[in-house]
Every structure is written in C-alpha cells, then in structure tokens.
Image (cartoon, rainbow, N blue to C red; front, top):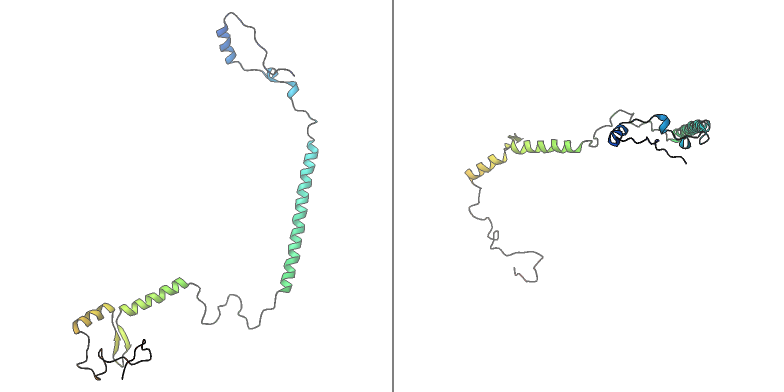
Length: 178
C-alpha cells in the first residue's frame, strides 16, 4: 500500500519560513490522489440495481391493484347481503316524530334549570280563579317574618299534641296501656 501523505519538501536553512509556507499550501489533486483507494467499477452493477427497483415498483403496483379489486368485490358482496329497509322506516335526513331522544343533554338541563329558577324567583299565577299566586322565595320569607305563622288557639282533641300516649304496633318491648 502506498502512502497518501503529500511528498515532503526539501528543508532549507530558513525552517520557520518554510513552515509558514507549508501551512498555507494547497495540495494539487495529483498530490492527493491515491490510485489504490479509488472506486472500482466491478463493485456494483448499476443496471441490476435499477432493474430491481423497477421490478419492485411494478410488484407494488400489481399488489395494490389486486387489493383494490378484492375490496371492490367484498364491498359488492356486503351491499348485496344488507337487509332490505322497512317500507315504514323514516327516510334518511328526516327527523323522527316527537318525542325524540335528547341530543344535547347539557343544554337541555340548562334550559330546565333556567325555567325552574325563573319560576322560583318570579311572580305569577298558579291558579288565578282560586287566587293562588307564586312569588319569589326571598319576598315570601320577608312576608312570613312580618305576618308570622298561623297557629291554633287550642287543640281540637286532647289526645293531639305531645302529652298523648303513642299508639302503634311497634312497642319497642314495652307495653303501653290504653
């Protein structure tokens, strides 16, 4: 094997000046060429590589065409085996009759909650003929504090109240006389 180093220059008495010249020296292609490390044309057959790539592309296209054909046949078979639609079925794009399933549950819940809040916080008639109205809860609390709760003057029955004995089936193990 031959060396790839450039040929050495003869040294002169002024060695430091020669080193500066060598540092900036550009080698010619003849000085850098090594004939033993060059490309050999017998290493690869370019025609064979290109023929293999073309064959691979052709095989890929052929397989893709076969797969497309198989899927087309399977799709036709699936369409032929689909059940017939009922003559009373709703046509596509038409909504079914009421009542329908909810499609946006959070929005429906918000509408319901808003309606309930409006009922609880607003004024209105429940039954105008009977004179029953509704009012906001806060106003009802204020009115209740002003007027107070209605109460009975005395019980209608002496057994009604906290002093009456408990009559019932569950005695808890004790006997209550009547």
